[in-house]
Length: 168
Image (cartoon, rainbow, N blue to C red; front, side, top):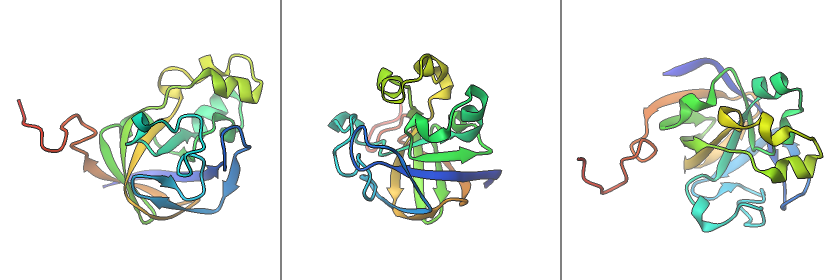
């Protein structure tokens, strides 16, 4: 099942914490690690702690950026999407290019985003469902700006059924 019109509007990486986000035409997603060359795959990002093991990729909505009046890369997320409400991807497997991902949880903004960008009120503007999505890379592969987002169905782990856990 495909989400009609949903696509990747932009791809952004940074080599280290605090480094400017760099626009990419394509990227290689590595299962369980992140985007090849990005700060989190290199373990040089601010939020590289082991507790973030199943959310190697971040997504942000171009529509939210437009609504609050910022350039999308200022949210410091990896993929900028268009045509889909990212909250709808929580607990869902989806394909972008060659990669298969699972939406894990909302990506709450931190004060660091506001501090590094120098925009007062940015953290508050990105609060709630506006901060984006954290996703797990199940199957890696190459993705391109402009790739469609194809919904594949529910993801048991993201929906709260851990591998090997017994159903109640």
